[in-house]
Length: 187
Image 1 (cartoon, rainbow, N blue to C red):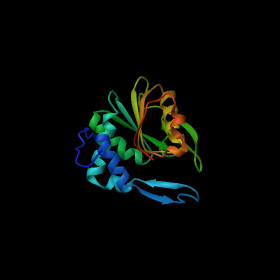
Image 2 (image 1 turned 90 degrees about the vertical axis):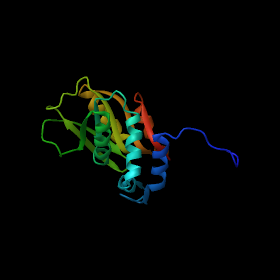
Image 3 (image 1 turned 135 degrees about the vertical axis):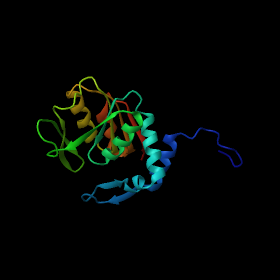
């Protein structure tokens, strides 16, 4: 835009959230191990306006969801806020060993090892539920892919995957083929 011109493009919740995330994310080199750069969104969540902007932007992509699945642990914060705004239920997708049996489990690869995720195998009827999966960061895509597989195996329909921050160089989006993916900020 040239000097003196006014930007008349609409400011959306997603635009505002992207700016907040870019401004407040703290980057930590060599964490949790050498060679890994960790995106710490704690400052984003601790800022009331930024947190509201992020929740509002994620709500915008959740139309039609009757359940929001938040991934352990930062996804819990986001998922609960989005679920309340959508008048939907919320499901915590947990790290292995945090839920009583019976559970459904998926193991997956991280950029620095392996892990497992679990959801209850009974007590919650997932068949036919329309689920929005939410997490803080999309890196290699293993966590989100495992979550989507877990929910699909339980009979749910994953209507979308939404993250606050996507690290494009790690190629995680390619592991989520077949699911609409929304990132508030791609770096």
